[in-house]
Length: 538
Image 1 (cartoon, helix red, strand yellow):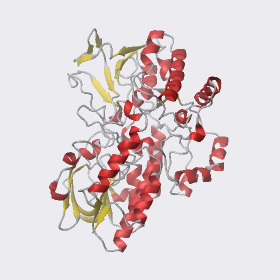
Image 2: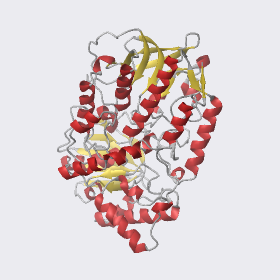
Image 3: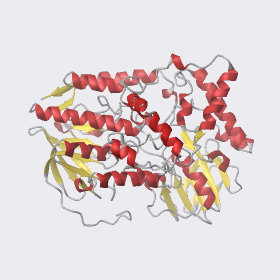
Image 4: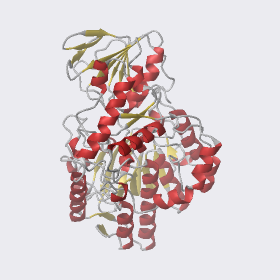
C-alpha cells in the first residue's frame, strides 16, 4: 500500500508469458492494452500499489503537467478522448492520476499487473531466446519479449550533501511525496532545489508555512502558466483543430534545426510585441516564438533578456530578482518551467532566498542546514532535487544480456540505444521513450503512443514470420548515437549543465540523451518498412 506495507497479492497469471511489461504509467498501460489486443500473453509489474507512474509518485504541492491537458491525453481511443473531461488548462496531479486510473478500469488492465512488485533482475537466455525476470516478491517469470516502460523521470535523486541523513525531524522528496499529503502550517520549512518541482511547490508551501527558506544553486527560467478552468470555447477550438493536430502528431516528428518560415521580425519593436503576446498567453509555447531560438545565441539572448526583465518587474527586491535571473545557460536548454506565482512568492515576508553559488551548503545537521556563513533551523526539509533522468530506472535493475553483460557496464560511458527503442547486446528488449528518442523534449503521451505502436508492429511481424529474436545491430546503434550527438551539437542545448546531459548526477557521464532532430517518426517507420534495418533478426 501507499504507506509501505506489503499486502497479499493475487497469484501471477503464469510463470511463462509472451511478454513482460515493467511499469504501469502511461507507457505501460498502453503497451499492456496493445499486447492483449494482439493476442499476446502478458504480465505487468508495478512497484506502486496503483497505476499512474510519474503521476502516482509525484504528489508534491502544486504538481501539474506543463503540457495543456487536452493535448496531454491518449489519442489512440477517440471515444476515450471525447468522453474524458479535463477541468483545467493545465491538469494537476490528482486529475492526471484519476485519468490513468480511469483508463486502467475502463479497459480492464489491472488484472494484467502485479502491483507492489519491484523487478530486481532480468537475464537473457541465449539458448531459448527468452528473458528470466525476477522480482522482490520471489517471482520468476520467463518471457520472449521484455518491455521497459519504466519512465524517464521516475528515479528520485537524493541530494549529495554531507549529513543528508542526519536531520532529526522530517524530510520529504518531491519525487516520493507522502500520499496522505503534508500540512506545513506553522512550520519553518527549508526547500533545496529550484527546478520544476521546486518552482511548482514553493508557492503552495509558502502559503502554509510560518517561514520558508529556499536554497537555490541554479536559477531556472520559468514562464507563467496562466492556468484556469477549461471553457466550452476552449473545447470547441480544440476539436475544431483536432484533425490538423493529429496530422502534426502523426507527421515526421519534431526537430530543433531552425525554421526559416518562423524567423524573427527585423525590428526590435515587433519582436518585443511577440514576446509580450506569448507571455500574456502563458505556457511553454514561449519557446516556439522563433524557429531559431535554440540554434542562434543572439536570438536566444534577446528572449532570455526579455524574461529576466519580467522577473525584475515581478520581484520587488532588486537583489533577490538578480539572484533569480538565470545567466548561466540559454533559455530553453534546461527544461523551461511553467509556474503560477513563483517569482511573486519571493515578495512574501515569510520567504527567504539563499544563493548557494555565493554561500554553499556545507552540511545538513540534526537541526537544519548550515551554509558557509549561517545556520538555518527547520521543522521540515523538502528536497526538490529532481531525478536520475532517462536512465536511472533502467540502471536500478540488474539487466544482463548476451554473454552476461550488465546494462550498467554497457552504459558505463553513457547510454547507447538504437532509436531509443533497443540496445545492442540485449535482444528482445525494448525501451519506451528511451535515450536517443525525442522523449522528454516532446509531448510524452504522443511519444509513448508512437513507441508502443512501433513495438507492437514489430512483435506482430516477428510472430507472423516465426522469428524469435531481434536486437539492435551495434554498428547501427553507434551510427545513431553519433547522429544524436551531432544534431544536438548544432543547437544550444549542450551549453547547459542540464539533466538532459546527466549533469545533475555526480559521476554520471555527460551525454545529451534526448533526440532533437527532425523526422524521427519517419525514420522509425522507414526502419520497420525495410525489414527492421539496423536490427539483427533471427
